[in-house]
Image 1 (tube, one colour):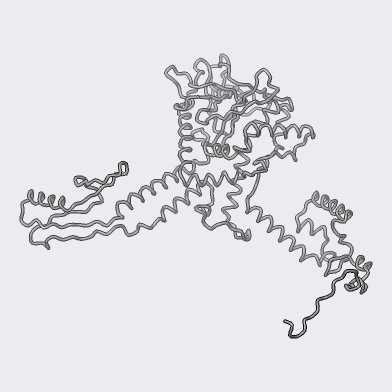
Image 2 (spheres, rainbow, N blue to C red; image 1 turned 180 degrees about the horizontal axis):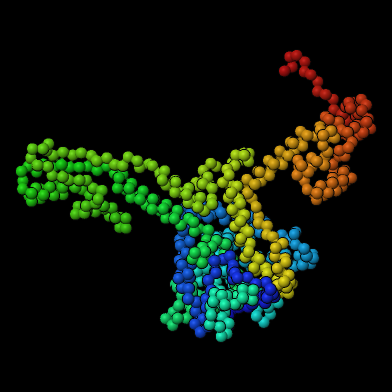
Length: 556
């Protein structure tokens, strides 16, 4: 195989020979297909899969332009990425990471550098939207090959239609058997699967599907190493076709149905909306040819079709053209009722859009967006959490799963950055990655409302049970079972309360207080409640003003 473009990070030590399995290594990204190597290994013979993925991404982007689909996508993106003037949309959480403070400080600094390279604070909405629509996202990690310890210099966005992830199985030299034949001939315990070469194919020509071949049979594109590309997918896989799907895939049928029903509704209303007239023309006993000529003469005589040209602003009289919405002219023989004009009514159910509303709700459900958000139905509920629709809770969980999957992109970049700068080793990252979390900025009203109501109900339960403390249960029982405080929270709150009582911030609850004023009784006992203090003599003070005299009768 030719040398790949980019850099590679040495992987960990492989498993021992004793750790064998008849199942080949795989990834949850839909790339379970292998390309053979050898003399004809210069191209990948899975053109159909590539072309299908190319067309899928193109279809996803066309779907995103539909107004209803765009509204649902914006609801999802706005819920997942919260843009605030002061706070960053995402921060790293290292509370559960078992590492030194110096390592944590360096990890936080490198994460901030990664956000600066992506310009994530400003472009978070666009990046997340592109990832959601395409179902995948690619970035090229640009580094200084001569000075890799300086880390990533630039992250360049790559169009998903120009990239493809490929896994290539290397054959052992002189081995003419395939993997199944070798597995049947060998002892399963002694069998090891062939080495898998993973790389990306970048095709700068967007007019061709990625991985397509030219006339010579060579792959149109540049082979790039796996470690030099940031690769984050949606996690949805079509195992039958072996390709990664996007979150818009379920909505393909719904959008097509909505488009067709809207177009048919417009055609029906245009054709059935106007009232048309039927002219019955008496032709007497004229022969057929002359009767038809007479009918045309009458029709042309009374027809008056004025056409407005929007381009030139002119009005023309196009009598030679006949539209399908015009009146009907029918001949009638002698003996009938003579010339007659009747009216053909228009459509009667032109205001019915029940089918349109059905398919719009179906579209929203296919995208996991609550139908209540469609056109602002139901408004915004500021009441109790019991009034919150269950669809909103499901939507919140769905957005949480999207955030978890999207954070894999930061994991990939952070791993490369820390290893290149020699902060950690690949073995260290395997242990650290599970304990690194990402905290997205959150403003979901329903979750806050739920937490507030739960806290209020717990306080009410504590107030109700407080007279029974010491008789039936203890304060520790209330704090653990009613307030749901953990051991760590109890210890922390005890220390804070003791410190606040010592500082005088809050009064000591062990000292009895006056129920009306809330002042401790010992302080009230020390107060001087004499008459001079409570009712001072205002006139005895120097410069005191005399009260105004009451006007006598007749002065007003």
